[in-house]
Length: 280
Image (cartoon, rainbow, N blue to C red; front, side):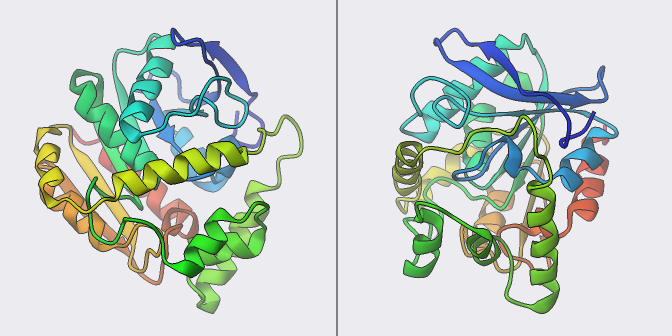
């Protein structure tokens, strides 16, 4: 089973949402629940990254309430996204998970770890930042225009996720090819209404407030923080803030990489994630 072929599954949550998800990989291991980026759906996860992790671990990808094929109302805050994620995890009957949060998915992963610490074994926070962090209170004009475009194309992906260098752009072209390879049973697009709700939640999360960092001291699960050295969506200094604030954390910064460093270096990052998750 692969990200290219895993079927779309559905499960009802106690909140009335029917969640769309994919679950594959090595059954019997601690499942890794993946939390997706702004406007992302199941098909925006890079098969090269996810399949490499699934070779050794069970992976679970899902759409939050109101996102793509999941029913229900899109949560208005990341605290509520955390509650929503826990409803999905509870519906699956899981009592221990690892978390993999990318971009705004990292905001959700932090909330899950704070709200239900006994559930979480280990955490991966990729291309993300803490509530109240640095330069997160809305995007600059050009990133905003690409991120909020009603109909996005490959050029928007290149700009938002990859550096303009020839090496990074080539990796971006390969990534775009991978995520559009799957032809059957694809996820639905994220609606513009859900986009706008997510955008408003990002603005609220990003209100500058250094005092918010103190809450991260409550995250006791070992945490891997990683980013590119030139993240224009969640500025790279926020990864340093996370690593400093979470007690049991480690930090890796990838060179010549933007927000989508994990898609530019899928094999390398998958190997790092697996090594991290296998530690005692």
